[in-house]
Amino acid sequence: MLLTIEIIGIITMIILSSVSVLSFIMINKILSQLKYKNYLMEKMTQNIYMIASKKDKETCNKLFDEYNDTNKDECKYKDKNKDTSKI
Image (tube, rainbow, N blue to C red; front, side, top):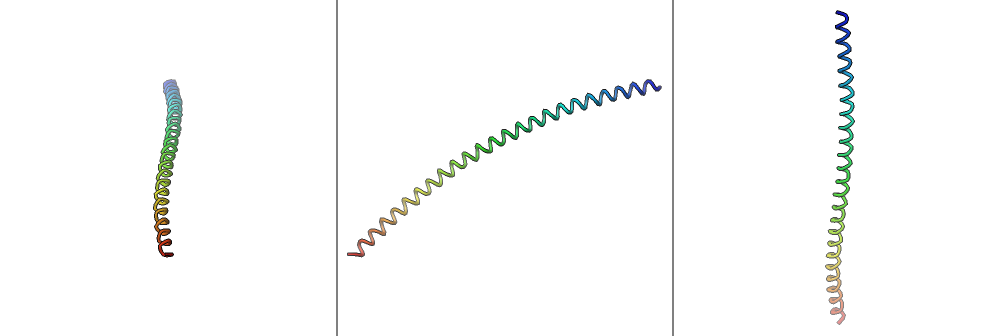
């Protein structure tokens, strides 16, 4: 009776040890995949930010150019009015 309890205890310890080792290996693999996934997400976020910044700069430059063009037209109009008022 005592021998069977010892054998069952040894088998249980072997099973628990093997499950612990396998779970440790799986957890390490899962964590490495999560790190890789986070790395890829960070790279994607940086690229999207760079693209958005580039588009924002292009849009800002385009609006600035349009604004300057309209101001030049207004200045020409004001200059013409000033010239006619002197006469």
